[in-house]
Length: 212
Image 1 (cartoon, rainbow, N blue to C red):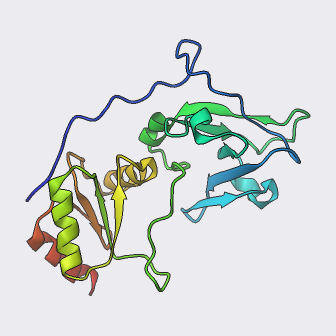
Image 2: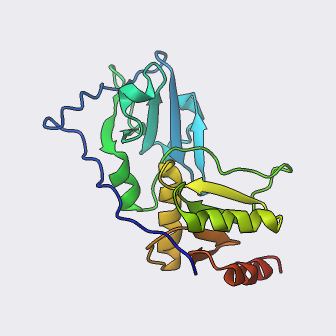
């Protein structure tokens, strides 16, 4: 079995008076501004909307707010998330947001809202691929796994857990549910079975089982 690992970078600190990050204040003011709201619904999926009215009442306690009037660089979106409790009655000045470390929020893995990220790649017919490869750009074992799947004409979603925090959070949740202790990449999700590292024989067995 081939796998890659290396010591991860330290997590970013939550912003406070001592960080000097200079993050802007974000408030949700109804009828003003342009926002994208993201929340984790009861169906277990991430949902996005541009209107407050689209958020179900039961899902408003913890909502990620993206203020479209500011750039991702201004908000340091790669490091921080802006969360709002939109379940309370509308205040005169709008709802404030709390700034949290993206890393810490995802690492808590408490079944709440996952990080905002692109949807997993879909097949041409709109279905989801049977296989997901969680890896990195620098890992040789990840490249070998991708090449093996392509050579055997197996569609897969390719998730870079260093470049996409949402993919890293998704993998963390899956590993926790399955009791896997992550130690390297790639991790292949084949029909719900997680395989750490690349082993062609193990991939073939998992594919055969998933296709039954």
